[in-house]
Image 1 (cartoon, helix red, strand yellow):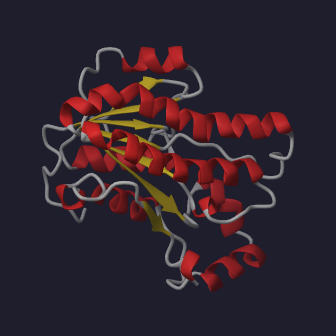
Image 2: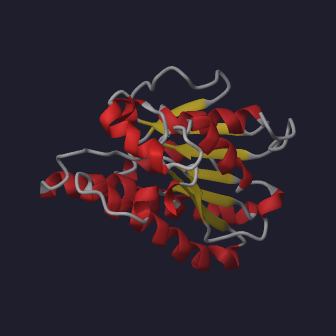
Length: 239
């Protein structure tokens, strides 16, 4: 951990899409820094959440489900939107395309809308999850690329709209991160080789890399930052 212990002591945090993957790592980082953390997600998760993280079931595509999950939470300081799906090769099917947008983009907006008043009371912050594909197209993933591009523009728009409430809205844009979702790519030298060749730092990123960069956006050091899309990609986008 690269931050001061207890940095978020007394803060209440919510992480949507936190029962596995990058979301779970972010939830654990917040808890390790002293925050009281509620993780929202579907199913039982992958077993990696810290013992002190509260888990509530929620579907970000359903307003009633989200409202039920937020019941009893009167105030929030930090909100992360990590809920997301990708359906490589299937997203040219319009129903699949619509589902990806419903989770990744509309779900992010639904969470932001639901927590706005709670964050207003604390002058808190939101961190959304964009992607390097917010800036590139993806032939196999038109829904994912479109939704993540939408998240980037949504972040900028809400940064303007929520600023009078004292709420900062930023986003992280992960690049090639070593997760179960990218394992097939990692294990295929023919596909992994070009990725690493274009990444100046010469390695896959880790969920920890993403989480530690994301923590910065919640700290007092970032108090004059809003509407930022922060790449965590080893330099891939500038190469």
